[in-house]
Figure (cartoon, rainbow, N blue to C red):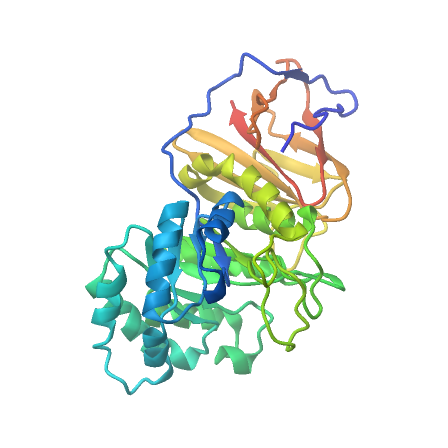
Length: 417
């Protein structure tokens, strides 16, 4: 992300923009990859080194290909390792144990023995969008795998808020999440929600994030979230802005893992699938280039994202369903002229604010009022451009700035007091 013609200043406010002599340093921190995972990665006919290199070149760190058999999975593990990727394994033997609760779990020992020592192995795929009636069996499988292999997590993905009671197996979504956490005790929470349809942004998108974030905090877990990257049915083709809106909304809520649905193009006519990031021959589509671009922006800030702790999330007016307004005594007092999500973070003694534009179609100039006690801000750049520094004179009666927000975009600042 380039530093936009950063400051067109708010009326009657003196703000100084400087590109050197920062007010404080931002540490690089440990070099560690933020999980960005493909869902439906390259299939059995695309198990080739060049195909897996393309996955890595797009900024993904984990691939999940739904191969099923042991031999294909072992081949994919070798290819993933050579490409610098990790692999989430889908194995038919696990799927059978999930489907038939009467089967003994003894085969899990061989599944673990087959994969756990491979350097590219990330974890065990268990099930997508389970009904609550499955939670007991899933808990048994998760506990057994954890006992056999405590280093590699089991992966289960939850429904979104727009799933109905019959799908959930509970009366409410909140009950569904609570029952899942109590019975399964997962290593982390994963869920999907595809917010951008041909009718606009789903009204319950941010309520879903509020529920998952709250549950994760209560259980001291991290959470992973999805971004839709394949057009189908009522869902629109990705644009850079639509991808940013989803990915940055996940990050501003504190997500520690990002997932794309899908990487390869699904087959079948059930949902009128259009091309995803690669076509049936493994050739990158225009959506691949968009994902690579936005993933590169996220990779530029991943060391910070992995260090910081989410402390609060607020929204500007108009408030989406289930969200909270900015408090009058916080570091950000108001955001006007643009709908935004405002996330507050800390990294040790350092404080940060992330502002995400909820409008994925229009660029807007947001008027942001800050706590009078803030001395300045350092923008965290998402490209090699030196960060912009803002300082207010001690005599400034208001601490206000006009920030250009591209569609679906994010701005991140370190707060200096």
